[in-house]
Image (tube, rainbow, N blue to C red; front, side):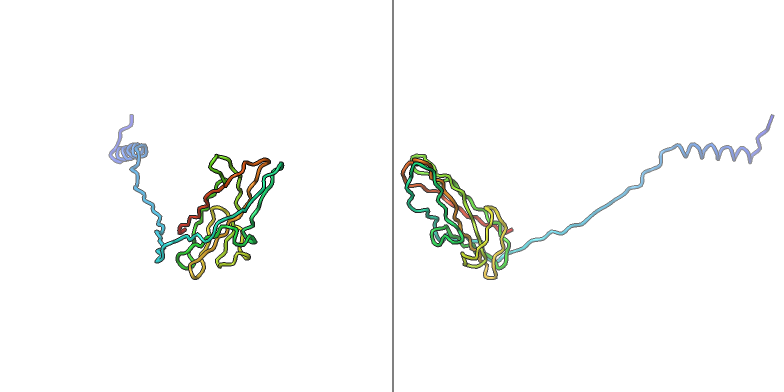
Amino acid sequence: MHTLNTKTLALLLTLTLGCFTALLPTTAQAQTAEASGLATAEVYNTTLQVQHRSDLAFGAVVAGSNAQNVTKDPINGGQDVASFRVMGSSTASVLLTITTNDLADDQGNTLPYTPSVTGAQFDNQGASQAISLNDQVNLNQAGDYFVWIGGTITVGADQAPGAYESTITVGAEYF
């Protein structure tokens, strides 16, 4: 039989406690993380305005036995196309929102309307470029942007006679 001396007993206790300590859960160390971003704002000193300058006029159309399309080109349509001027802060980015509907008479008859829109930083209709009904544009140094709206109406075969109209709305907001 072996007798345990003090050194052996101390060694056994150390090994036993070491094993138990290895089995005990370790305490979690707190971890932190963070990231930063910027908050930005652009302040304009000019109120954004939209000025109506002219209406879209398709003119008199004679209904016949065949459907026909009547088109007004916003680039070459002259004064018969709708025209708007957007005014605001110099070189600002602006989101344009253009709303159109089919033309209707007071009897509920309609003429389908497909808009065609162009725009330019300067009042030069012939040099304007196609834009969409919802488009981001930049105002010029003077704070202006010009929009022309034409399009096509479809006059059906034996279209009911009457005065047809609709509203075209141009909205603008700083972007």
